[in-house]
Image 1 (tube, rainbow, N blue to C red):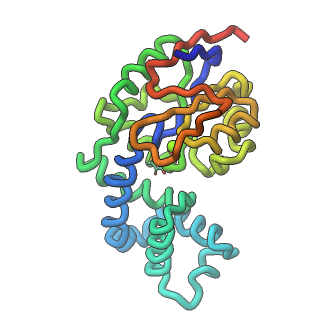
Image 2: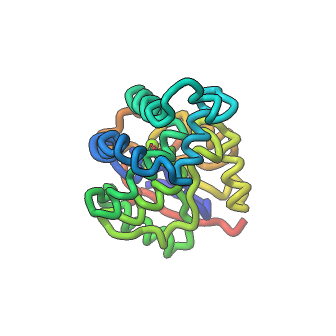
Image 3: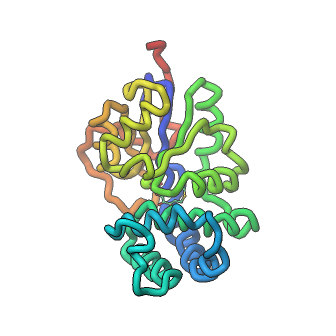
Length: 245
Ligand SMILES: CSCCC(=O)C(=O)COP(=O)(O)O
Ligand SMILES: [Mg+2]
C-alpha cells in the first residue's frame, strides 16, 4: 500500500489504466486498416487541417503546401503515417489522425477500451474521496474522450475533469508537467502522476509532481529494480490522505 497526500491524480493510459496489448493489438491495427479509406473520405474536411499542419511541422516544413510540393498530397500524408506507425513514433500529428480514425470504431461498437479490472471502481472511489482526476496520454484528447467514453466498464468521462495530450508538450519533458499544473491551477506538489514509463515519471518529478510507477502485466518496459518512485501493481494499493495545503 502507498499513501498519497495529493489532491489530484494525473493518469497515463497505455500500461497504466489499460493494457499495452489492447493499444498495440486492437487500436493500432484498426487505425492502420482504416487509414487510407478515412483519409480519402475526409480529405476535404477541415477535421484534417490540424493533422496536415502537424505532419508538415514535424517533417520540418514551413507549411503543409511546402511539405507536399511536387508530390501527391493525400498519398504523401498516408505514406508518412505508415512510416510513423512502422517506427512506432508517438508523433502528435499521427496521434491526431489516429484519434479521428478511431471515432468510427468506438461509435460502432467495434472498439471497447480495455481497463484493468480495478480501474473503474478505484476511480469512482478516488473521486468520492475528493481526488481530482485528469488524463495525460500520447493519444490525442479526442482519442482519450472516445476511449474513456467507451470502456468495458462504461462511460467514465464524468469522473474526469480534464485531458492533456502532447500538444501541451512531450511526456518526457518537465516543462509539460509544469504547463499541466499551471493549466489545472494547482501547485505541482498537489498532483500525483501515474505512469509505467520511468522517463515520464522522471520528467514529472523534476517539475515537482509526486510520482507512482505502475507495473502492469504485459508492460513492455522493464520495471527498474531501484527507483525513487513508489511502485504499485493495482490502483487498489493507493490510499489517499489529501492534505489541506
Ligand atoms: C488514449 S488513446 C490510445 C492510446 C495511444 O494512442 C497511446 O499512444 C497511448 O500512449 P500513453 O501515453 O497513454 O502511454
Ligand atoms: Mg504508458
